[in-house]
Length: 322
Length: 232
Ligand SMILES: Nc1ncnc2c1ncn2[C@@H]1O[C@H](COP(=O)(O)OP(=O)(O)OP(=O)(O)O)[C@@H](O)[C@H]1O
Ligand SMILES: [Mg+2]
Image (cartoon, rainbow over all chains, first blue to last red; front, side, top):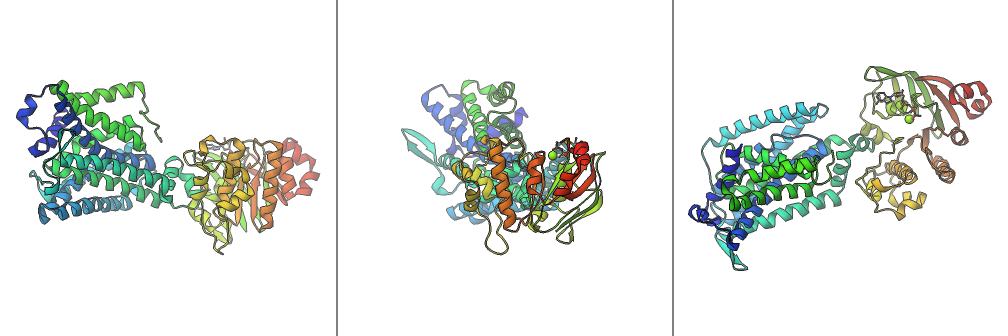
C-alpha cells in the first residue's frame, strides 16, 4: 500500500515535467517559500481530484448506504475513456472538453447498468455482502479495462492552452494545476446546489436518513437510489478524466484512489460532502507538505492524520449521516 | 373504501396480529383503540405496506394491496402519519412539505400555502430544520406533509400524543374540517376521549385480536370492554 501511495504521488507529477518540479529539483528542495508554495499548489491539485472522487463515494455511501468498492475502477474507466477521446481528437481544446464531458457520462452509464442490473436487487443485504459484491464488480470492471485498453501505460497531454505555467504573485504555477484548483470548488458548489436546491437532491437527503418514510410519501425510492448511484459514478468518472493529463494511465491506478478515498470519507464523516473536502485536504496537502519535511516518510503523513482523527473523533470530523 | 380481512402479521418470529379485520367506509372517521403494545401501529403499518402480513387480505378501493410497496399505496391515495412522526431532521419545514407534494388528480389540491392556512405556525418556522421542532410542531408538520400528497384516505397514528389540550383541540378541529372536504380517516389514539369525540365507528384491539367493534355510542355504553381493554 505504501508503495502504491508513493507511486500515486510521484507518477502524478512526473509524467509531465512542465507541470511540476523536476526530479533533480526535488532533490534540492529546501524549506524555502517558493518550494513551499509550489508544493502547496501540487497538494491542492491532488486535493481537488481526491475531493471529486471521494464526494461521489461519500454520496453513494450517504444515500444508498452502499460502500462501493468498485468506485476506484470507475475512476480508472473515466481516465481511460478520457485518454481515448483526447488521443483520438488530438491535443486540442475541443478534444479535452469533449473528454471531460463524455468520459464521466460513459462512467455514469456503466453505473446505471450496474445499479439497475445488479445492485438494486441487493439493497436489503448487510454491508459485508455489499462490500464483497462491489469488490467483485470492481474486479470485473478491471478485467474489462484490461480487455479494452490493454496493460500498457498511456498518457495524454493537456490541451496547449493549459500547458506551461502562469506567473501569479511571482510564483510560476502550472496552468493545468490552476485549472484543477478551479474545478474542485465548482464541483463542490454544484453538488451543494444539487443537494439543497433541487427536489431530487432534497429527496435524496431525506432518503439517506429514512428511506421507508420517503416511500410512504409516494416516491419510488428505487429510482432515487439509481439516480444517486449514477451521480456518484459520474463524479468518479469526472475525477478520472481530470486526472488523465497529469499521470500515467494504467491498470492499477484504481488501488491508491480507492484506499485514499475510503479513508477520506471515513475521516470526513460518511455522506458529508464538506467532510470529503476536509479529508481530501488532509490527504492532498498532507502528502505534498510531507515531501518537503520528511520526503522518505511523506506517504505516511496522511495515514498518521487518519489515525489521529479516528482516535479523537471515531465518527469523522463532520456529521455523518449514518 | 378499506377492507382489512383476517391479517396475521409477524416481526421476525413473533406473531403480533391474529386475524385482524376492519372496514372503513368512504367519508368515515374510524378509530382503532387499545393499550400500549396492543397492535395498533402494526395494523397501520400492515395497511400502508411497511410490514407485510403473512396471511389475510387488504383491499383498498377494491384492489388487493398486500405485498404492494408503500409508494404505490401512497400513489393510490393513502396518506400516513406515523406515530414517531418521522420528520426529516436535515430538511427544513418547507422542504419536508415540498418533497411530499404530489399533484392532485383533479387539479386542485394541497400545496404549501394551503397547509400553512391550516397550521399557521408552520409558516412562521418554514426555514427551520425538522430536527429542531417541538413535539407539537412535528405533529402538525407530519399531518401537513401527509396532506401534501392529496390523500383520499388518511392514516393517523396517535396524532394527539403528548400534545397540550389546546393543541389537541386544534388538531381535532382540523381533522373534522378535513372530513368535510371528503377525506376518510383511520386513526389510533391513546386519548380515548378525543378519539371518541371525532369518530363515527370504533374498533378495540388487544393482544393482536379485535375485541370489539361498533359505533362510538355503543362503545360508550359498553363499560365492560372499556374497563377491560382501555382502562377507562
Ligand atoms: N419492529 C418490531 N420488532 C419486534 N416486535 C415489535 C416491533 N414493533 C412492535 N413490536 C411488538 O409488537 C407489539 C405491538 O406493537 P405496536 O407498535 O403495534 O403496538 P401499539 O398498539 O401501537 O402500541 P402503542 O400504543 O404503545 O403505540 C408489541 O408487543 C411490540 O413490542
Ligand atoms: Mg403505536
